[in-house]
Amino acid sequence: MSQKIRKGLLLFMSLVMLMPAVRGFAATPKQEALKAYNRWLSNAKVQVMPKGYIDYDRVQYTPTPAANTEFAIAYINNDAIPELIVRSKDCVYCSVLTYKNGKIVRIWQNYFYNSVKGYYSKTGMFVDKRTPEFARIADYQNYMLMSPSGSVTKRFDVLVSSTQGSKSYEYYSPKTKKWTSLKNHTEFRKKLLTFTKGKALTPVRYYRNTAANRNSILK
Image 1 (cartoon, rainbow, N blue to C red):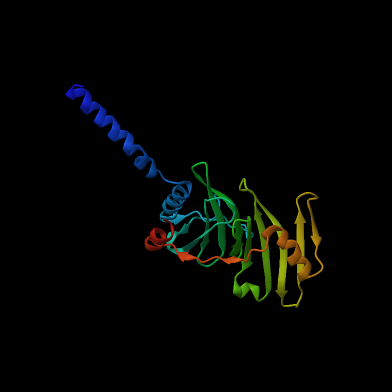
Image 2: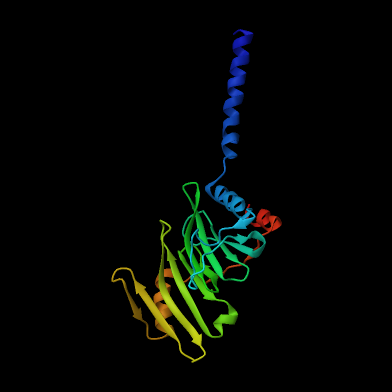
């Protein structure tokens, strides 16, 4: 075997041996999502609500300065890609976003001092709740269900308490497209278990939108 052929074979074998290592450096879907979230939150202003969003007071939303936003990561549905929760620091605006087909996609948003309180890991169910100062007047909790495709449907509307001392539990059926009143908390919990499968609520922890927090959490 000539020296030239021997060198060629050695080079070929070296490249073949390196191929698994090179493939090992490829970013996973989770890593791609976290990097995308980091870039999105790094803007000087963050689009917490959709462009052109108009609130109940007929005021059009304008992007929020990054310093006035907070974020969290949650594994809401049953895949390896975490969802990004972002809100304004005053809790007026809040959105849930996911990463799909190489893009950040907004799947839910709310306004008027409601933020995502927690989620039932990998079941698709998450809960949004009034901030404490408004909860004293009427403590509403909305139970939202995220489908595998990423669409979100409100399934439970719960009035935990109010200044009048009233409580109510409402359940929405996509099949009938109607809301039904549930008798009491026991019936509500029983219905909720069909979605959460016995999992406990995972509280959402929000972080200030700083470079240090982004690089620590979104990695």
